Image 1 (spheres, rainbow, N blue to C red):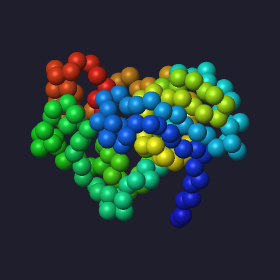
Image 2 (image 1 turned 120 degrees about the vertical axis):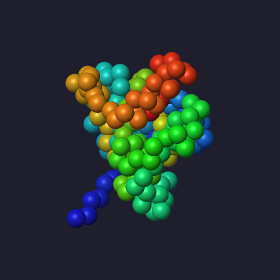
Image 3 (image 1 turned 30 degrees about the vertical axis):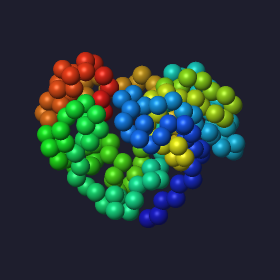
Image 4 (image 1 turned 45 degrees about the vertical axis):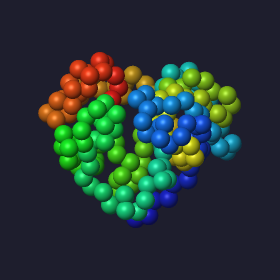
Length: 167
């Protein structure tokens, strides 16, 4: 089976790749939706957040073969990589994965025609956007379950930095 996807838009931000990698809460930017898809944005401006599905175009063929990773994003909280368990890529949001697809939940600050201005962006400038969906409260899972190691890391981060979004 062959799957062919055509981008509906592209990410724009003035933040560098390093700034994005090291950001606790993401950066500001905007999504340019291509003119032929603009009509599909009607009504989106009424939502506070959007879900963006993107293609991580900078992931190499070697990185696409990675199946085990450590949560490297926790380095920014002073947690040593060696303290983190080696886990399967599918229980992380690592960009290194067989199909480098990203899912980002972003705050929509405004819509200007086919341009969506967002906060919390964790995608690089030039990242192709595959789809956009409104984020609605029915998508929020209240009683989500996590493994023991995730809970231990969450507690360490809370002790160090209080209640911050860390993964």
